Length: 211
Length: 266
Image (cartoon, rainbow over all chains, first blue to last red):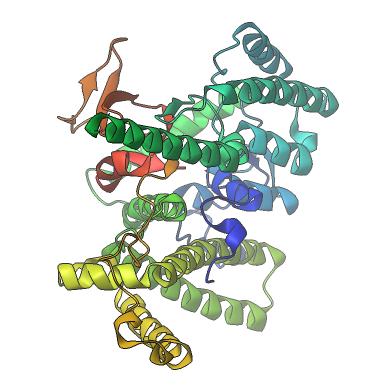
């Protein structure tokens, strides 16, 4: 098979992370890539540096980085620059103790709805904790615990929501991509079965009516 | 606090460049870069969406001919660009700052290659699986495969099914009675041709329509939300798909919306 069996009809965790890494994020560069025109003649070394030419995103931002003034780049690029010590990542606004607390409260109070977190919150949080832990203002171990609480509250609700699986459709607003990916095999399997049972029952009814 | 000031500065910076570049192309290459970069980013995100759709959809989706041509051309150009750059860097042994863009550009190249490769592998897998179905499709409406497959995929499909059929013939079929030699018999109680599982459940996200082009299909549901109404014929049910919502639905119900790009599969 051209595509391994375990990748058919679903995504691997690495692929979900790959998708998330395409999202933009704010960084504080520690380097300057913006060409300085008036000094170009006097400092030839700066003028001869390589220009960035990107083929998947807008390269305007990376070509105009000025040290210590924030700009926005793709997450994968931010993580790469961070790894090289060329920037620090500005944590997203929702990834603070205060915001997470209010999300957790929402999750606990509403049993049938999910808080309006970004669609990639879990992966973003894990990636940033892992690779840019020193860029947070709040202590990372507390943030990590909050994320875990949030995840558990939502997991409980997802598990409870599975009883609503039916043969028609289901609405799952505000569920993140990684959570969808987790429940996909089970939910799709059950709903496919329910559909077949429903169709068989309808057939039987029709058959009985015809006699 | 300092972040705020920087943000304002950045905004100012952006504004001035925008103003400077719109009336007359003041910067020698900045406007040109901007122009091509916008489509570059859009192409990439379309490609990624296409990849996701292809991975989740039960059937083979039409091949994005023009998009892939652009992406592949860019890929080839970038590989060449990087090669000339890296030989230049090696010769001059430039300072370490020159290596950083190179590193990032190489990483990006690999990312784009991965998407393209994964998309094509997924399509090849489906071509393998639905070989007979594609043949039936081709017989029923000639020319359908031209849009569905790329030229290379068509060559692969033809040779793959020829080899497979030869194997079947040599191994089993020629030892069977003549009336049982068919591999694509649809007359009996069960069709021998594997069709895609049309009613498979898929996860989908309802996209917001472009603000400048209001969609005539959009209706308003009971809560005053814009939505698309779809009909599930098997159940005689009408379901409202609210914009921005995530649903699990049967594939055949939302197929038309998917082809129009109004929903994406996730």
